[in-house]
Length: 548
Ligand SMILES: [Zn+2]
Image 1 (cartoon, helix red, strand yellow):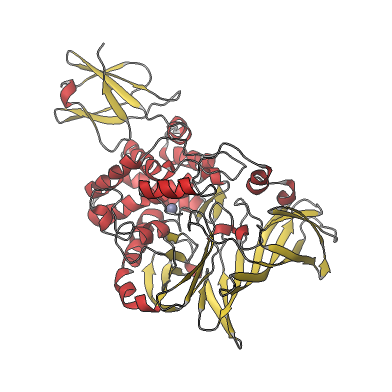
Image 2 (cartoon, rainbow, N blue to C red; image 1 turned 120 degrees about the vertical axis):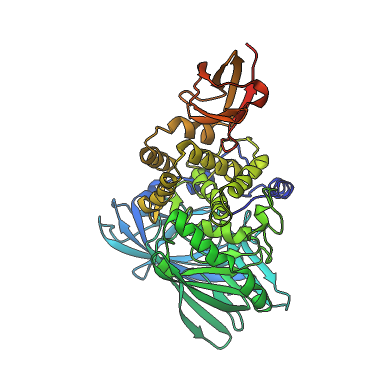
């Protein structure tokens, strides 16, 4: 998500008013949380290959119906398979090879008893038929479901969003992030006069008497919450972008009345592509194209169909979250949500506890966009400007195996932690090679925090385990304590985890010095005095003069 973020008062209001929203603090986990958030035995034995999702959307009744045919490979023979679908939607029947199967339901989790022997290595299919009135989004995209809106001409304007809540809020699937299908087909039937835009490429349009069916094809692995249905009175324009991997189709679907505005405003999209291919490597889904799709909520990183609802403003709904002025140079939603194509859609968390992998890198990407077009100082102003939004209320990493994400600090604190790391390395080319290397090493993969940490440590040739421990798993900000003893500077870190010892650049009276504090007092020759002592502003570290 999104991108979320927020204006604190806005965030505060939406988080406090909805108990199920993304980023909501939680101190109790239910059986349902475990069924949703863990790799249960009924999930672990089979590997997802392909989803063939067919859905009919009836906006006048707020009703949907359809089926999902799931192709999977048997890893370890078992006979009971878990599929998720959230009430009030209900499963009508499940079949395998035309035979109807028994289903035992536990609210959102449905346990299907297979009749056919499941042989190791076999590729099998089941089809889940379902229907009902799906949950209406209370505050999309953070508290999602279906958004049933009308455009200014009174035409239906409908969209799905489901990060955190789970894709099973609108279609049946294996609703855990560790396993992605290799590819997918999405067929959406809508009333005549409306268009559906989903993920990937449009392969066919089938006209019926009162409906039109749009068939979309996704050739790459896709995570569940990245799948989406967007229905509206869309018009299309597009361009061919000369990218690192060749020609990339960039397509834009907007409401008819917004076409002219969008043609100017969406010029940020190719600018984004240029900056992010520079920093992160090739766009990860050339085969599926890149799209921006207008929706009736703020936006979401739906894979290859990034949804857009920033109302054609610069900044975040017209505001600069950083307060530096640089945030009004670009459309926050275009830059942030598209940044997720690398960190969220290409590199995807296995467990939502590790959601920082999506949000910290993507929030950080905003300042790399500023860096690319306006230079380093501007980028520093931008990312440092967002520090005032850090809360240090809870750790950035959430609880594992219960579908729980950590603090919203994964946005601004996470961005500042990565910015700090860039300056710890003090080698921009190496840093860029690490960002590109991550996208290559974990191409189309689901990952854990441990994998990301270990990749960066190895590539940087520095053991960063204490650094990540400090910033991701505690709410303490390191404090550099210092003291002048004649002409010498004495210093140490406090409020740190064991082993935290990152180098930092400091200065007094304009003279810069690199020091590597630890928990023990150390001494350096640095003339100056307490009043002119400064830490290089790029390091997210507090400092405090002490008297000894
Ligand atoms: Zn985001």
